[in-house]
Length: 251
Image (cartoon, rainbow, N blue to C red; front, side, top):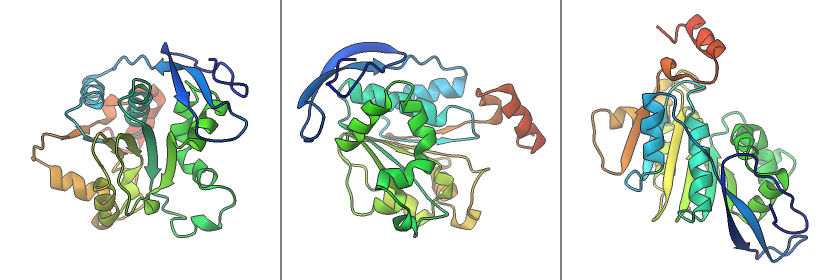
C-alpha cells in the first residue's frame, strides 16, 4: 500500500485495486496518496447470510434491519459492505454509531477525543476494519472524516448524504432515539441497524429496536429490508451455539 510517508502496506485480505485520495488535512500526511482499495471476499454460510449480503449490496434496500444473536455475521458483513462501498465510490464516508447506555450522559467526562471515548464501544467494529487496514490508515481515515465515530446521542439534527451508516447494538436504544436515528438518512445513503433482542439493557417497553421491529412486522416497504437471524445461523463457533443452548436461546 503506497499511501504516503507515514503509511505502510496494510491491506491483509480481499481483492485489491488502486485508487487515490486527495487530502485537505494538513499534518504529517502527504497532500495526495495512493492506496490499495480492498474488496473483501464474502462467502455467505447460510440462507439468512445470503439474503442479508444481497440486501447490503442492493441499491434498492436503503435501510436494513439485521436482528439476531451474536455470531451470525450481522456486524461483520455490514463492515465488509461498507469497505467495498467506499472503495468503489458508492459512498463517500462510513458512519459508525451505537447507544452508550452506561455513560450516555457522562461521556464528556471521559478523557481523550470523541473517537477515543467511544473506543470501548466501537472496538468490535474497528477490529473488523483492522483486518483490511493498518492502524495508521484507520487514523488517517478518521482524521479525514472518511470514517466517523459518534455516540447515538450526537446524531440529532444531522443529515447523512452518500454515507454508509452502521448502527450497532441498537437493542439498547429507546424508541425516540431509534426514530431520531432513522430520520437522519439522506440521499445516496444506506443505513444498517443491527441488534439482538435477547441481549438488551432496557425493558421491552422502552426498547427502540423491539418497537421498530413490531412496527415493521408483516409490513412491506420497498426500501426497507428486515433480516431475522436465528441461533441456527451462528457461524462464529460451535461453542457459541452451545452457550446459547445452555441459556435456552436454541429452544
